[in-house]
Image (cartoon, rainbow, N blue to C red):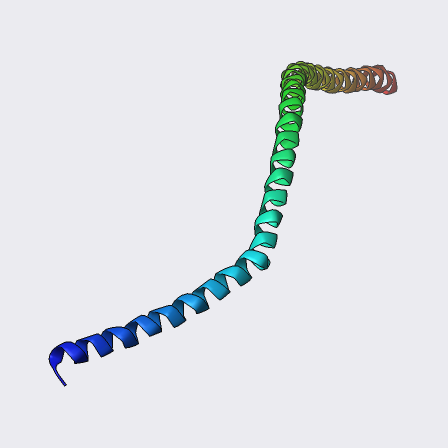
Length: 135
């Protein structure tokens, strides 16, 4: 056997192997084409359409809801500022009431002490004429 004949036989064997492999691949591709791949692609198309629909709905909803929530937040901030002012006014009124009560208590205590001293003076004055008469 010459080298040329050996190379030709080897080439024939490799070509037959390539033909067999090509037939197997064609059969596999035909099965994929007719089978699951088509269904998967259709399912992906449906999912894409639904996702686009949901995204457009979400975009529209977020556009209206965000604007409404922004208005509500602004109203809440205004209300917070107004309540802060009212709390400040109530605090100052409370401080004035506390100082007025403290002043009233101090005046009452001073009045009671003055009345007690006046009462002692009257008792001492009443006792002085009685002791003079007895003497």
